[in-house]
Image (cartoon, rainbow, N blue to C red; front, side, top):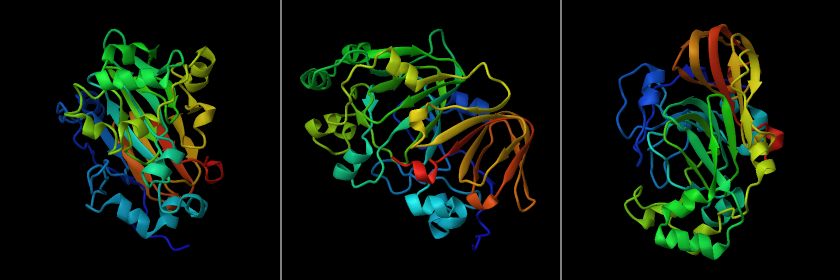
Length: 344
């Protein structure tokens, strides 16, 4: 297999496209930089995904200025591996973000693959998962799924009148701590609370149906991806989430401080994979995104090259890096696309 010289493990600069909500100080603190601008709450890491309706906003650039999307599409086998390419083409099938909620996010949901294919011309919807890496404030929470079944006309009325208190009040409120992870299937109404800092894994789209847009977006037009309201609301899972459902989506891993810790619920496997790695680790060949939460060390690649890593480093690792090895006293989150045979 021909390997592009550019298919190398690479440390990535910050990539914070403008957002409508506040946050960013936790990202700046992790990275050790001074960029804590009020509306820099998301860092799109190794992104080949644009913001909805944009040509370039959201795309990651390599240190030499080239777009990662273009480099991957020019040599997908080196970056992604043959099995991945046979399943997903030249898409990384993954979007990773650092997300620092400086305020509560609006209640929203995301379309599933079927809806995205029918209405948005995309193979991928937007299932996502949250890996909580920091919290602040007296009551850090996330809101996930309706507590009880909600009739479609009730949801429509909440959206028409922009009844924020009803929307937020209808959701399960889940206290979170670092190490907790939450799987968010497409269609699930949700909101991330103020003071919650996460590594977010998503399918590679920017599709959001913003049910609670007033006070967040300038008007309703941007809330529904250009769809009419009735069609947009078809994306909402109106079923109540009971304790058993919630326990299948939420994992608590904060007490595990050694070895390799699988982070996500089983239902996430067809969409993405994530592990927290403590100290040295052997990594099989795969496209991957590394986020260093603490400490320092190196990534040793199969060709003998070494990539220095320290707290706040974000790096992209191509399949062509081969069998790699993390060395040093460091804590990292490794995000990977789904295994080629597991796509839903």
